[in-house]
Image 1 (cartoon, rainbow, N blue to C red):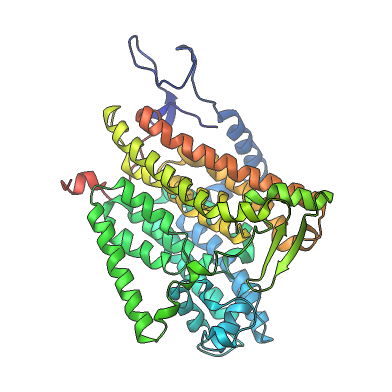
Image 2 (image 1 turned 120 degrees about the vertical axis):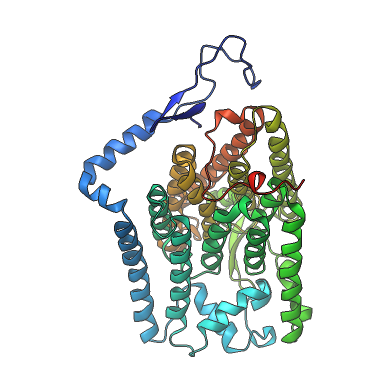
Amino acid sequence: MAFYPLQPGGSLYVHVPVHAGAAWPRLGRHRPDKDWTISTDSFFAAISRARDAVLPARLQAWLKTPRGMWTVLGTMQGVFLLAAAILSLFGQAFSDTEIYRVWASVGFDSDRVIGPSPWVYPILALIPMGIAYSFGEAPFLFIWVLMIAILNTLAVGRLTRWGRNTKAIPAALWWIGFTTLLAWLGFTRVDGITAPIVLVALTIGTASPFLASAILSVATWTKVWPAAVVLALFTVVRQRVRVVLAGMLVTAAVVGLALAVGELPELLNFLLEQGDRGMQLEATFTTPWLWMSVLGIGGAQMYMNHDINSMQVDGPGSEIMSVLMQPLLIAAALLVAGLIFWALHTGKGNGGADRTALLLFGTLALTTAFVVFNKVGSPQFMVWLAPAVAVGLSLQWKAWRVPAAMLIGVGVLTFFIYPLFYGPLSENNPFMALVLTARNGLLVVLFAWSVRQLFLMGRNPSAIPRHGHSMHDDEQTSSAA
């Protein structure tokens, strides 16, 4: 599902000729007169023709200007803000913001809450909830959506250098489109707070490991998943001490905050709250039990776990799988981190490792692992996968168009799952079970693709176009070992 080896040739990409005696990657049986990868050029050429048939050339050109980009972003976010304002006028919230508002109204006291505890989230997640509640219950949803809109604006601005980097504008438009496709999943969940923060950190990346790690650590203490990006950053950069130091300083500040508000005993509850939960309906590894429930096999059934507000599936062996998922997730993350480290050092001997590309491919592989091997699998988790792809597109469009296209497919299928037809899915509708299965299958393919990219970067770094960065790579800015 890749399209390499391709190298820049003017404004186009051309196949690199193979000279006599050149070493070919040992990827199994191959013929030296054949490209050992699968080209996707025909597929994307067809997509381009379809786009050209729908969008006039002048409109396409306008969209790629700073004014076009900001207009699209403003329109998209304006629609969500307007909807949030209307709901807020009637004192309503939406989706998880209803739960967040209740938590904030009782001062995040879990003893005064019926249902999931506010401490299912790390402590920094409670700060935006408190800010959104600062003017009471009625405007909670509007303020929450406004905060995410501001963060998305900052992320798009950083990605494109506030429109000055016009080559990155298509990547920003992809980010805006994907965010729009996920709809309220990106605007009413804590995940929508963390995703643009991670995007900003990735634009800094290897140029300033300390700053990137500090930003990612703040995001991790808001929602756990950015820890995957911290792991990728630690593995890739030379200045690993700075990555650890930044994380320790942020963690020390978080501990100090917990002490100041008298909530130190609750600090790590977000880790404990997840341990006893079963296999969530949407999780990738739940798929066999999903179909057992749909087909009425083995007494498998769906049920609502009101303690954590989650739809789960029980059946023969589901309890064992639920216990195994945590160590499987940890093992998958460590294996991917090991592959990143291998690709970095093996790539040095095979023509030079591109640390920026490794960070982005590694981030995609690790965040996808966090989704695929997770027993939770909530639909908003799809937001986690977008930052690495958006930054990758801004640096090397052709190298990232495959995962970008796959994520659009993931987004479309997820939109059908939630908010459109989650009710029928939870009532054993076979068509919606098929949609969910297709979505989960696409996630597995995305994970395999990203792992393969890391393998290719170790065996033949020149097969993947280098990712130029707006900032110098850490190899150029520091001689630290």
